[in-house]
Length: 233
Image: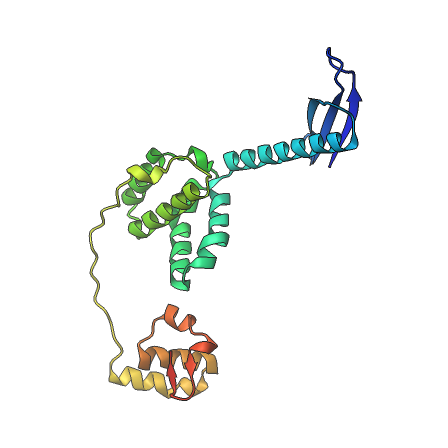
């Protein structure tokens, strides 16, 4: 909301007004938030005054946007990145992997830091500490941070990408023996399925007979079902 009042003309006799734009109330300081500007006009016509007020309102709005961008924290940007990009454009598996990586140490480390203040050194130090603590999924965390800062560049939130000088973490491959159900275990599993909730019964059978993984089962939609040929598309 904006208002104005007339001021004394300038030394050349041109009319002036003082424009006030209201930006709400600061509860902490117990005072209204206002922006002011003195403007010299060619006339005091309604059209001229309205144009000057609109231009100042736009100027103030842009100032607020710039201030928000400058002060946005890593945590705040990640929330927008999730809402605008990850949950909209990526598959369920990718979304779940990203969320797991964020909870695995990224948010805890960068949380309240201003996004614009995060430098390559901070990212390198993060991975150094992760390695020293024996943390897992370093490559996954590297890809998440790379995606976050890539979008921050694309959206004009930061000017420099701190991931540019960060090398992908080297992690020795870990080998583990894959365990399978034997014939007797599989028979036992199938024998109790009639006692299971129908939705879960179907999910288990898809995993057993189709070899589908959890994310693949979760991604099945009605349009994927071919009732004519009793198959999944």
